[in-house]
Image 1 (cartoon, rainbow over the protein chains, first blue to last red):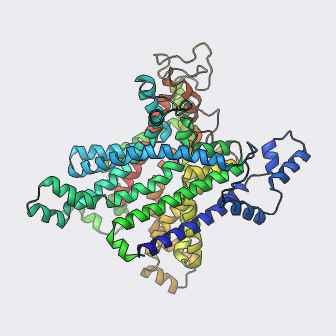
Image 2: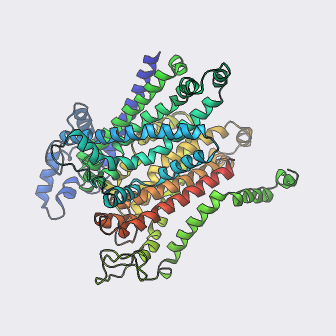
Image 3: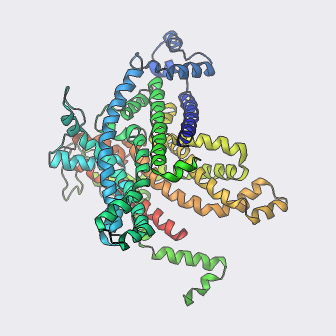
Length: 317
Length: 287
């Protein structure tokens, strides 16, 4: 059952990715004028522009170009960068590794914090602790990352001097040093998603607290910590865990502004600089890679929720 | 309970008055409106509200800390930060609402269409919407802006376009709830065409949903325009826009915090204001 469900979800993701690849490819064709002119600039002579276009293969019909691009892409050959005149794939791989580090750090910070905040708010539902947590989460969640980054840099980098202000660690730094350099860039997304996770955890906990099985557990004389651990939290956190799995996509691929601001060579920053330089092979490969991460994250979220939820496991649809 | 009898009678003016009465009691809405109206006033009155010329260089007083003469200090060119923060509200308050409006109009039309006709059209458009949502919006926007170039007009178009699927999805869901109701069947029997049914019969009933979604989107549009301007893909210099100001000055943050902190605070306050309005409206329309 669960296998069938997952295969179906994975297939749907593949279809989504296929459509996405088409959109990404067509997006790259929106560039007015020709590619060689845009890359080489207005001063280049017509012959070198034509030669560039021919060398890059952009003078062929669109369907041919699309098929050529996508059929190579799935084998890991992502084309050649206009800017670097070199294969795109190694750049993407490096950037992706960096982004995953940052995402992992943000993830291990925000998930426990958000769950703790949400559970605490639920246990104090209606009182000022609850209101403070909900309000804090809501307010932090709507402030753009670059604004919170600026404030965090001022506090921890400039005034307290606790943390480095850029993610650019010295060559050959150990894991702990890298974490120190990544702490400040990891905080803005933590602030954004704290409220989101706390809200889901809070609602789940309140539901579980009011459920019959909790009342039964209390009435049969179980100690409160046991009730909380075994009955309330175990049920309350199912939806939260599903929600956190779907964060992975954004944390890995969506931190364009944070990565740029902290000079971190992640995939967001790579997409940003490719967009600036109109390096379309790099841009398209980066965007499609982020799409693939999103698809994997959403299948993962489904997998987790199917594994945790017996009803979904049996239902299958 | 008794004095609400007027609200029970289904006459339109008193229903509107009742909505207004509820709205005016919502503290969230009022605080949000106050913040929003303050920034709108700054945007509209512009230079008449600023104590000093926001664009005037003064190379003798560059990077001066806050003082009586310059409340928020001066930037690298000696321009008065307070005046620039006031005037910096203007471009974002033009670009973000226009983009939101574009996205709402397009999204409502598409959502109505696919919700009403359903079938293959719905399947195809829904798949495309899903595919576009399989990416962070900022990445979709970057890609499109790289292709079409950055100006206030293209930023409006691109943000309007990336919002369209989100609003279309909401309006589609609301439309699906309506199309099987009796009044739509009655209109069909009367011989009304699909366009007339969609826009005259169904639209008024899904409009509140679309409008609430629009205010939520407006908050996000400001978030988005500010972020894009900060990374150089939004509003362009020489505008006094807050995102641009932060981008220009944040390398100086170590010594000259006033060149970025006030712009950051202004951006945050505007976004919080719009979100309070959205929350307030949401609780008024869907208590």
